[in-house]
Length: 212
Length: 238
Image 1 (cartoon, one colour):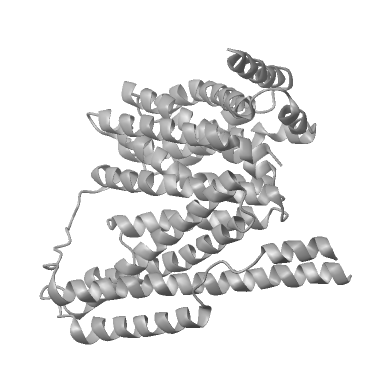
Image 2 (cartoon, one colour):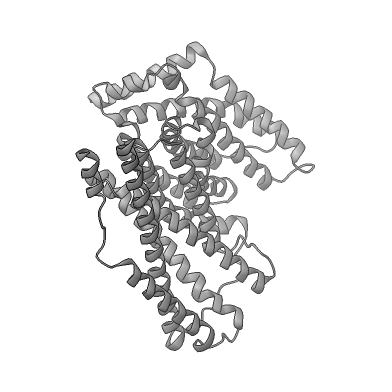
């Protein structure tokens, strides 16, 4: 119970910070809208559903990267990560709280992005929304973990996409598959499996990422 | 003087097989494998001479997997047992794995060019998987080289190497799944009747590649250890 209270407190801190500073979420929403406009000009005249769904997922992935890159910036700028590590709570709580906060930002950006996609291109089905939720869990779990890694390096923001994209390929496969086929059960199951597997790995090994 | 000397002592010999003997064995095995592949194994009825590249392609691929598995194992040992040498071993394993992985991509490409007239085919599961792994493990180097040597670098590298063994089966499943949506399976590989000289040749080249990889691993490890010792001695003298 104590563990979840810690997670709640840490996640609330991130959400409060974003509510006051408002520097991540507006950037994500603007970015995804701009990407859609770029897609319109990059795609052929009246593109098929298959083409636009693929690009929707590219847009979601890059928007997520934008948010993930910012996730540990406040900790770095204010030097609060040392404090968090020293706090008398399980280290994996830091990862879980940060993932939850990133998930909230990404979901909020998608609440704008998906209707926008529906207006600009094609309508969004129930399977796509289910895929978005499952993919978001995986993206945030793995991405937050790698974000914590990247922020410890000299290269910082440069490194996160390099570390993240190879690991995100299975998410893209599952998500695009679920969005385009008639019976998406298999792809959604695969996404859920990915989420569970990597969430456990991240949860178990986060200790080593922040510990000196 | 005594503290660095103690650490130098800890970086001792890691295996009892002497390096020259290992090098000689891998030379003999690789030569035998080449002789068997080109002169003993029968020419495939469907694919002809070009099929012979498979003996190398497949055995190199399995060797690369073995390297990545070794890297993950050493990473696990580092995190679990705090073995001071495990970080270096894990890194050398990944390095060898990337070298062999690149060879898989090259041999696969040559084979694709000869069989289907194109240098790259997205329909070959193994090739796509190796491309993903290649990107993943190249990022490993980026991560490692942008950290200062120390326990944090060892930890982060180890955790990332462990992610690799989770990623391999997941990516493989993903690539299989993606085939159904992106394009149907256009061709299936009609494997030869696996037996007789084909099996013998394959086994020899497989063993040869594994021993070669192990030899290279030992050479690189010895070199890296020597570097470390020289650096320590310099620090003592400075």
